[in-house]
Amino acid sequence: MKSSLKFLSLFLFIVIIIGFCFCVYILQAPPVAQPDPPKLQVHTRTAIRGRPTVNSKPIAYTKDVYRFSIDKKYISNLNSAQLSNELLFSVALGQRSRFSSEVLDKELKTVFNWQKMFADSGTEIKLRSRSSTIKVLLSGRNWLLKDSTGAGFSVERNGDALDIYLPNLQEAFNTNRTTLSADVELSVETKGKQWLIKDNQSRQTYEIRNGNKQLNIYQQSKYPIQTFLFKTDLAAMTALTEGYFSEDLREGFVIKKIPLSRNAKLIPDENDVNWRVTDGTQKYYIQNEDGLLNVYLDLESKWLLVQVDDNIKGWVQRERGTIFLPPQPTLSSRQQLKEKLVTLIEKLKEKVRISEQPDQTPNAELP
Image (cartoon, rainbow, N blue to C red; front, side, top):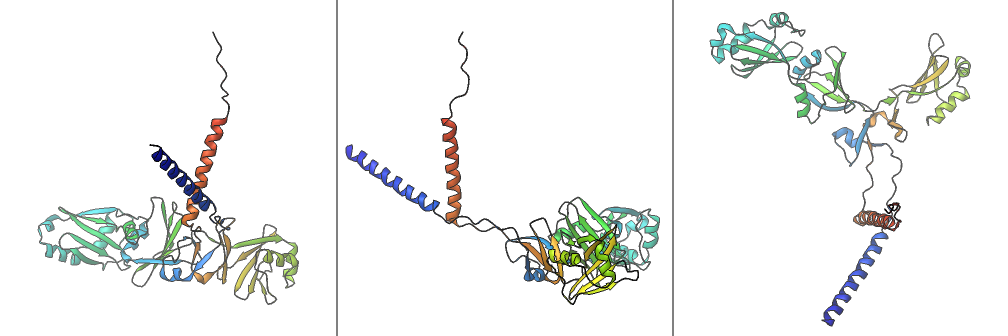
């Protein structure tokens, strides 16, 4: 019995020593580096291939980034500002409901006056040409109607009638791994050529351009490129009218980390009220507004100013593509154990501190 107790005591002593040494080893792990203020990183490979090359989060784009292309039939959604496959109207087949599938396909192609049907339907959507085309998707059951602009409509047989639907633009985005929320605004920039889809929930804007054969989808920067740079008082206007930059104006460019070179050119407008500045690949314009001179950046410049917040801001090249926020540093297994051990020790200290506090509850009065 005594030998067993002696062996158990020795074993516990060895375990305690090993545990103590292990804790000391963990606590001597290299300290976790505190991350510096985030900086902008530009990845040209990402801009070309359309996917991240590091484990980081995209925060901005210096130019619109191509995402994917879709069929031109979705022009009908864009013109009507509807993303889903909404039912537009129905047409009774009448005696044609008894036709065979092949004959009905031919009737829809040659006999139906689709332009008049759209005009008489009461819907605001109009068919852009009388010479519309019908593509058979499922003989006698489902067709795709298109006009001269490429705008398409789904035609489905429902018993003795035909139902005409808009295509499902929302589904087209989902198919290309781009999910749109329910809070979406659709606007027309150039009728028949350019549209914008603004997703208010994700704060993303998608530009849709009408290409030769397809609609091309581009993603705009979540955070706008800064155009306003700084302002100064009208005292600098005298120097501008005489054809040179005042010290205050030059100092404003220096503060923004874009000092003007000696070759910077000053070009006044016809009224000598506004000026354009060309400094190599950088372009600016100065405007007299509300008693102040406001300096703006021309978005055709080589370097653009991106500002996400007070910490994440900087100048990036317009042609470089996607800007990423660097990921947090990866901790080693030893550093991770150190963090857990320190947290455990702090919790134990807190419990001991609470248990050592005297009971402040007042004694109850004796009867």
